[in-house]
Image (tube, rainbow, N blue to C red; front, side, top):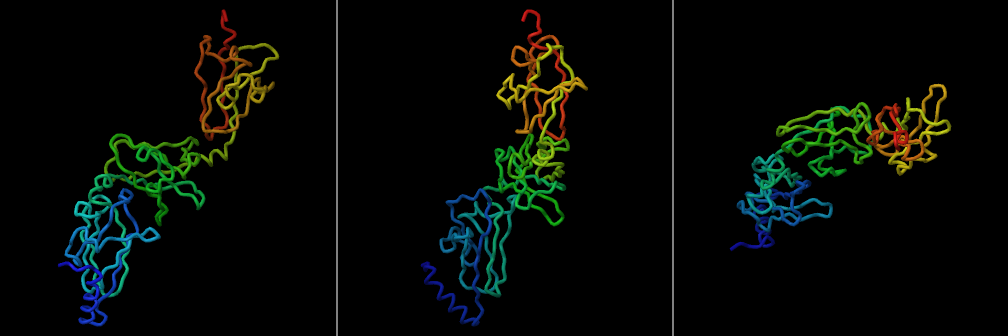
Length: 340
């Protein structure tokens, strides 16, 4: 017959008192960290030499505290404490981060003690946790103390501020995070929690990393040259300079038609200025988004630029970066086509 725990506790206390007045000690187990895939609805148990290694013993089920930790007090004891943690059976026992057996937790109980435990993975989930690569950022431009650095990519649907892929800095100043490995190409961006604050290359363009068929548990080191928001602050404008065009009537002007002005071909706010000394037209465009599309017109879509043979050209495009000026040449005008 198995007696309830509340009936057994007096016997344990009496036994300890009979052996040595202070020979038994209180042991409290706390679980402070769980793997992210841990089912919220499942219970977690301790199993060990204190209960004959019985699985899913309700007497040794952890309770959840208000602060999020899991808590289990054991009966007063002395000597060697041996135990493992599981979610109900040996198929769900805890493992290391790669699914390898941890062995038993062993403690020589000589004093009342509290044990903090961090579970890295579970046996039934370890196949998805084991296959990983480490990303190390050995150099990065500084950023505010209240910010953090994250990886976003194909492995998490490009989610921002994913705490699973937050970089941690070690004592040597190197930032590290661990990403799930996959076959094929692993793509990701390093950011500070916002798409406006992504890593940029030396030219100031947003940087997307790609690792081809990474090996399991491989280490990949990177240097971050710039942050896109810092580039934007230092290079807020683009000067577009029209070096040359086919001739057009005296008194006409050139206009900038773009996705930033609803493709208006005759917008006075986007009229190009003319420099009589250099004989060039120019306009300053403020950086309002990462990239723009545009064409040059003489005040209407019937007077839009073309190629040298009069054929329509693709929209011009520009990605904002460190370069502050763009020189272009207009090869032809639509209204100057024969038969137009």
